[in-house]
Image 1: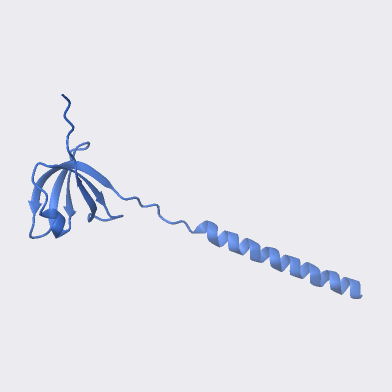
Image 2 (image 1 turned 90 degrees about the horizontal axis):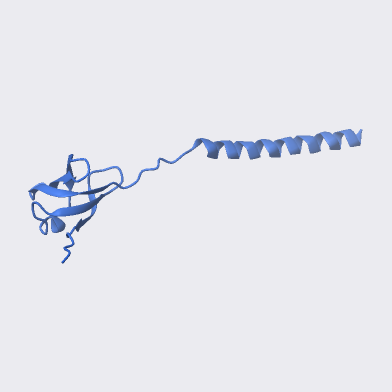
Length: 107
């Protein structure tokens, strides 16, 4: 009788441990983080609105115009018709960085 009781208790413990193991793996498998990447825009500045800290950039590849919110300190250094590379913050139209692009001339 003692052997049967010990075997049943051991069986219950093993089943309990395996159920906990499956529960942990199934919770992690269902949760996926959204892969959001920062958008990079290369193009020419069409307009600058210093009152609202916004610029409009026409993309080189697609030709679409995008309105971007920029830091007031950076917007004062920009000019219309300049080529820029703007890195946007993830999932927004706010600029994380702005870099002026200079065309290389060959002699």
